[in-house]
Every structure is written in structure tokens, then in C-alpha cells.
Amino acid sequence: MITRLSAAAAVALLACGLAAPATAATTATATNTAKAAFPELPGSGAGPAGFAYLCGNAKDIAGEPTGACTTWRLVAKDGTIHTVPEALGWEQGKDWGDRGAFAISPDGTRIAFQRAADDTVVVRDLASGETWSMPYKVRASSVGSPFTLKFVRDGSQLAITTTADAAQATLVQVETGKARKFSKGFAVLDADPGSGRVTLHAGRVFRTLGDGRPVSAKIPEYAGKHLIWGAFAARDGRAANLVPKDPPACGPDTTPVWLTTFDTRTGAMKKVRPRLPADVYQADVVDWLNGREIVVSAGRERPGKKENTVVGSYVYVMDVRTGAADLVAKLSTRERVFYATMGGYATPRSTVAAGPVAKAGKRGCE
Image 1 (cartoon, rainbow, N blue to C red):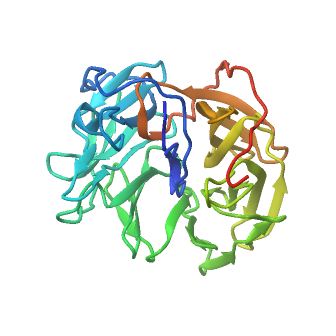
Image 2 (spheres, rainbow, N blue to C red; image 1 turned 45 degrees about the vertical axis):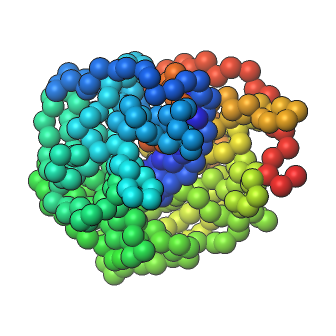
């Protein structure tokens, strides 16, 4: 599949997403078109989800999600695929199209989306079918969703962040509807339901709320000689980021060269080498799994004489102390993927066949 994955953060796999975490991009292997027919998501009894995607129509000149591809596909952890027609998928405007926001909780049991029928932001429990409406008003006359959705920590908190110039984040307690807005320009990285501490991020700044007076910490510009950019994820006063080899330019080499962790109150940085397969060309932090491990989305490719061959989109769990990585999932579907977002990573690990690893070819402006 070819995918922009989003992390909910922006955090998510972005083309992969996973988000900005807040959101980054990966690409996976692709085969086919928008003709595949999948059953609709049942009202209840659905298994935990792993990722969702909009397919790219091979017959569309730009490969966009036209025709049947305008509907979200939800992929369960067991590989079952359903469509989600209730959710706003790809909406075509006068001059361009845009996607509706979609998110999956870390345990895969809940999804969040913009309901196409009335533009309400909702969270739905896949097993019971129970649905909660969020106290958020969608901007009138917008194409797609002018916001991103991200589950924070688990399925009980949802961050809704506008994508306009004056971006603003709202954190909602799903089952009570209690909402809290934050300063414009900041995205929510973490919200501890126990202590009430919230970690925000904007540009090169972390901001911590809830431990007395607000504390801001500056993020270093470089790790070694490499520019720090891309997705951040935070938990318990620490943030993580994968630093790529080169910044995005004329076909960048975004191979991760450092795994950096930061004290979000001081900005102090530590770094280790990420131990990922040699053919990983792009990777982003999606979330913290626990106190010492993070979840990483990665794209892999094989070098070729003319063009590199994309192998797939993968999910790893990485130890922030050593950089060691364990493969926990491969995201796959028979359709060409235009955009995807992942979840369901906070579940028991299983052995995943990774396939042979090849040395990286020349990338970027080389």
C-alpha cells in the first residue's frame, strides 16, 4: 500500500501519519484500485482496530480518493476490513479535496471521527456501539475537517486541534463531555488524568501545565549536526522524537539517525542511535507505550537502479534507553493507500514476519 500515515500527532502516521504526532509520513507497498468492496462496520461487536485509511483511486489523474475511495476503511487487528460510511471521508471542494478527521484509540477499542450527516465530532466504542458526541462545533462551509483528532493516553480523552493559522487545541473527556481549551498555537502531547499535568507543544517549545505555574522549555535546534523536526510524543514529563538525516528538501533522506528524549520542563536532551532495519527510510514517534518504550511508525524500501521499491509500513516498539526496536505490526491492504492513521498498538505483542532487509540506496539530493 502507498500510505501517508498519521500519528495522532500532530501525532499519527501521516502519509504514514501516524500526527502529527503532530504528524508525519510513511509509504508502504501498493497494488490495486478503488474497486474492492468491503462490508460496512457493524453497529456493535467489532474487534479492536489497527489502522484506518482512504484509498487512492488508480483511475484518478492525481490518485486521490475519488469514487469508492471517498469512504474510510477500518482495518481490525485480525485483518478484517470494514467501510465506515458514517464518517466524513474525502470531500471534494470547488478547487480541491480534503479528508475528514479520523482517529483510533491506542487499544483499538474506540474510534473518533466527524459524522458526515451532521458534522458532529463523535467517539464510538467498537464493541458496544455506544457513541458520545463531543462539544465541538465544526467550522461552517469547510471542506473536509478543519481539525485533527487524537486520543491522549487512552480512549477516555480526545484532543481536537484546529488546522487553521491560529491553531487551537481542545481536550475533551469523552464520557462526560467536559472540555478544556488551550492557548492558540499549541498542540496537546500528553494529559495525565491522575495528576492533571498537561504537556503542550508549539514550534520549538514545550509547555507544562498543572504543576504549579506554567513552565515553558525550549527544544534544542540540533541533535549533533542534524536538525530536530517532525513528530513529538510525551508522557510523564518526557518527550521523544526521531531525528532524520536531512530536512525536507528536494527529495529528502529522512532516515532516522537519532532517537532523542527531552525533559519537558527543562528542555534537557539525551540521544541514542535508533536500531531499525537498514532499509527504513522514514520513521516517526507515535506515542509512549510505557515509561521506557515508544511506538514508532516506519516506512521501508529496497534500492533500485532507477527507482526504489517501497516495501511497506511497519510499527515498532523502541526502547528509549538503548534504541533497540521490536517489530509489532505490518500495515497492509490490497488497495493503494492515499492516507492512513493508526492505533491499536497498546495491545499484546505478537511475532511479525518482517521480510529480508536490504541496504539503503541513495536518497534525497544525492
